[in-house]
Amino acid sequence: MTIKIIIADDHQLFIDGIKSILSKAIAIETIGEANNGLEVLKLLENNLIPDVILTDIRMPIMDGIKLTKTLSKSHPTLKVLALSMFDQTTDVIEMLNAGAKGYVTKNVDKSELITALHTLVKGDYYFSKNLPQDIKAWFDKESLQPEETLLTKRETEILQLIAKGRTSLQIAKHLKLSKYTVDTHRKNIHKKLNIKSNTGLVKYALKHLP
Amino acid sequence: MTIKIIIADDHQLFIDGIKSILSKAIAIETIGEANNGLEVLKLLENNLIPDVILTDIRMPIMDGIKLTKTLSKSHPTLKVLALSMFDQTTDVIEMLNAGAKGYVTKNVDKSELITALHTLVKGDYYFSKNLPQDIKAWFDKESLQPEETLLTKRETEILQLIAKGRTSLQIAKHLKLSKYTVDTHRKNIHKKLNIKSNTGLVKYALKHLP
DNA sequence: ATTCATATACCTATCGTTAGGTATATCTAT
DNA sequence: ATAGATATACCTAACGATAGGTATATGAAT
Image (cartoon, rainbow over all chains, first blue to last red; front, side):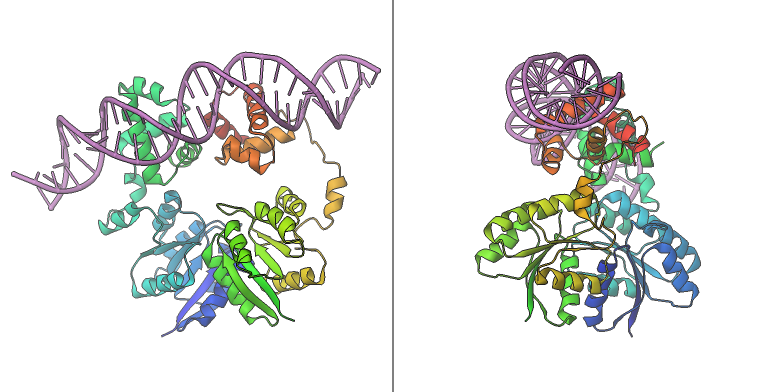
């Protein structure tokens, strides 16, 4: 049984490359391509129905997250494999919450891509190796809405203060903690979100926290 | 006469894709691949000499600009075709200054890529359609300073990079400036915006800059 | 009852930013 | 032609963040 896929990416050359790779794989057929989410929906409207949609996250007009959300309502049996350059936890979680069944970064090799496609068709999830460990753990535990439970209350509290521009020492005094404790929380936040810089933390906080 | 090429990109899947595309093209042969600039140099040291090097710009360890500069000294007959996701003029100019003979973005299609390779081998320059056609004209062109902006062009440029999480040293290298100069601009931005922390700058940039 | 997650605290080395300067060169407009 | 703005470059001290640890106490869940 041949796996039928649609590829969505705003870089045409990348689509061409994937198509070329998959044309050599047995039992996989590319039946359509799109440069943004909206174009995928148009293909589906024309009754071009694949088994898996391989989609980039960041695309103009309609991004991969919006696309996946739409699909999980209109075509719930259709599997979505996210294909991104970024391994930031936020992206992974957003895609999973939207309904994606797998996530691979663009530095996997072709065999891993093919493995991922087969895994999804079997009904399993697939995540590439370089993603943070926690993600798999959350799904093993079948915990829902991982975004909400990602950071603990304390971590969230501290992240909010970081985003306000407070230093570790100021936060420590405010919460009557040791500076060391605040720094430990900082490190744990970094690890959980797979973000290394203060700049990144600020951007995350602005997007995801009240 | 077959055109021999080496592909350099930090995303293995992208290399695999290009290789797959080019394997179907007549008279083009991929003789090597690399995940960063240094790996390209190693291939050349082992007497693997291509006609064209197809290289990404942003790569770890040694980026495409550094690689191209090195090559234009060590292997001046070798043609470099830059292959980037970004069409920012600064990138194009940097690559051209470094000695690249062409620049295509990753949203060209496969036929355009092949055209570009043939054009370079013929000895001409090639730029994909979405780039400013006359690069020299761009150099001569007077850049317009629209309306009364608080920050200067340079300051804006640097602030955008700060907001992307780049350090002063990284920005300095990218803009070919001294770290000291970048820090001076930083201080001037602080003063003009009356913001003292990096955190504040990031928030300002997200709100006010494209 | 014991494991696990959470929260706490400490240590150190290194990196990056901030703040206080000074000093030119060029470009722009009066 | 000259003042003012812009862009460049350098120096250093102090402060804050990052990345490696280690270690203990507690409450919740199996």
